[in-house]
Image (cartoon, rainbow, N blue to C red; front, side, top):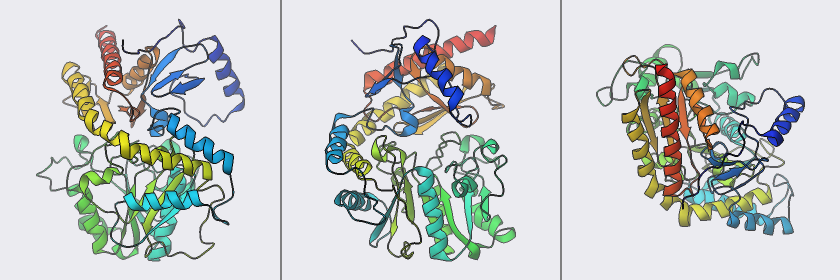
Length: 448
């Protein structure tokens, strides 16, 4: 018998969880966003149990972090073994082998141009982006950076300056880091130029050279172009085949570094260690975090020795490359190589097929897009006008929670589907069946 969600409480959250929510609201920062009142007591694999005994299927993956599933036994074993030996001794000032071992493994798989690779460790995706931002400026001796509308790169001041996701994230934090220009991303479903691929000839990439460099942005002053291989918070937008290759061609023509933000799309989420491998493009700097250490705080950038030419003291991190986090990451990479990539490559097309079946069934679904275990479902009020169904998307997320499936939104009106990379075919089916029920219920309510 397939495992299914189990909701004991008549109303969520249940009484025990509700008490924790009240305590949380009294003491913790109101800046955090909670889509619905899930309280986690314990978790294993793709499943989460709350304090009241309710069982949920987790297709948020801890915001694309727990790629190996919750509490994978091999990851736990590696962490416990490392904790018995060493928990912390700052890699900024001293040496320990596990940090070197992980750096060697990341350098081996990072799809960069030829040359000896260098690795810098930090604690999060935002810090990885900050590190790449600083490294690009240091190496090129240029100040300006191109980022994209809809992009999310983090909330620290430099990363926030690059972010183009929601204005609320920047409200009352100005002045931000100067020198950032945002251009439209390749959102083919909602092309900002009203064109269609392939007849558009990736105009959304070429416009950087053909318009921006000629009017408002001197190419010779641009240090880097930072881009997500698949845009995450912007709505899970998958660019067309020639997009990234065109960006690289433009960047290298003018001595600009191409930074690939793999924080969400990397670490096997799309069936490749790094999502940019699908386009066979080699960036100059890669940022990574989230799924790299199965829930432990760890981020990194990988680039070449030529580019990472900053001097001692230029950049550092007390906790970056923490021994326990590194041990978790080494175990995670081994699982990716031996098991998880195969599972995503096998079941990713099946997940996409099931989601597209829902698209044919429900008019509210305007577009389904994704790769591997990274899918976005965009909801619209009308398929012709493509008016965004924002309230309906939020209602879908709530309905799924009530039925025991954990999902989150992306962009204004899309649902993100990011199962753990260990998810089985039966677990994918359970999730799709629940989504089907939610869409049917939403359809009936809209008719009323």
